[in-house]
Length: 452
Image (cartoon, rainbow, N blue to C red):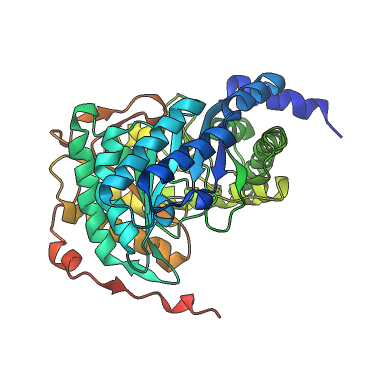
């Protein structure tokens, strides 16, 4: 039964505390588009996306008007392109990327994810060809997003792929240096990648997913922060309970929108990703939540503990609100997209080493971090290897989205605009890991992966 107070509280969350549905993402299987002819494949891909997602944007807008809930993004994710590319050459994959861009423009979405490859145990020829063209594909398209899974807890870490992705990230930045190196912001390197993630740039439509599916990502850091501030001087047990109750309410809104969108679009409801996804807007920051718990600044000693509690409480509240929770689900810490993180980095209170420690207890990883433009591919690969090993050892998803800002260094900043925000360039340890990275091979899976 609906409670009037709950309704009024939800309205206030939307009006005053930046509660929104961050994305409705339609996943579309493209297996039936496979062809040995690149032109035929691209035509089939375009036709299927534009047919299945034809009404996605309008449906999102209609639901937003009906329920008064802002729905910020409408997106599409596809079967990882390397799995449908077959014998495509690098040029064939580039043609596919342009086809995805054209389809995204036709249906009016803001991003399309799935120009992706899964190479955690090794390369197929198709994956190798796709990865080789990622820098050019992301430079020549605006809406196409890419991801590469280089490790799983079961398989270990493909260090050949880690080494290559350091080079690919640099190339993405170099080819878009005239646009604040935006290419690198559309590329994510994963360990234990989820197959139902609605958030970009890492979304793709997994191999076990249905023909089409609707996944929704909620938000609401401002809501959680306000709830903690209203609670005043209470102990951490009470704060955890407050976060759980707030996450429950946020997730219920997400499930309502997800089910309504699924019904109207004739696709099954997949999951609600209950991640706290920040924006550069004031009052919509995960860092501010941590500070509302009593930290002088995000990055202070105690930050990792506070984040661990936040992440756990969000998940406990969310799983009580929805029967299907998935994706990443927890707290995001993307530097450029979080006003509090930006401030902490600018003041020198938050280092990349502290961010790495924080990723051991939160949802994603080193996300949207601007680094000096002269950072070598080997140092980038070393950062990837460190972060990916946290995911493998802890049986969780971790990811890396680094932006080497060509021509800029520590003390300068970069502005991506919109939800991607802006970021001060963070200093790095420049000691070279080159010999370690170039050894190649695979780091074996941890012993706790043998659970059968």
